[in-house]
Image (cartoon, rainbow, N blue to C red):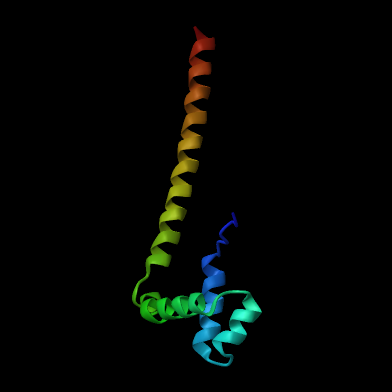
Length: 95
């Protein structure tokens, strides 16, 4: 049984963008990327349908901000844990 190939979002975007440009035929793109022309057509139509979301939404920016906030919070948690352990040791040695 043949294993299914999986493609990254960047790869799909690259192929779909090439198809949308129209500089090469679907057959030429299929041969170049070793894909079925129908697959390229699906990726192209998906790109054209949802392409407006790229400019209409700032989800990417929100996700980056959320990730940065999470990183800062995890760092703060780590520092507080270290302080707590240090204080526990300090109290234990003073008694």
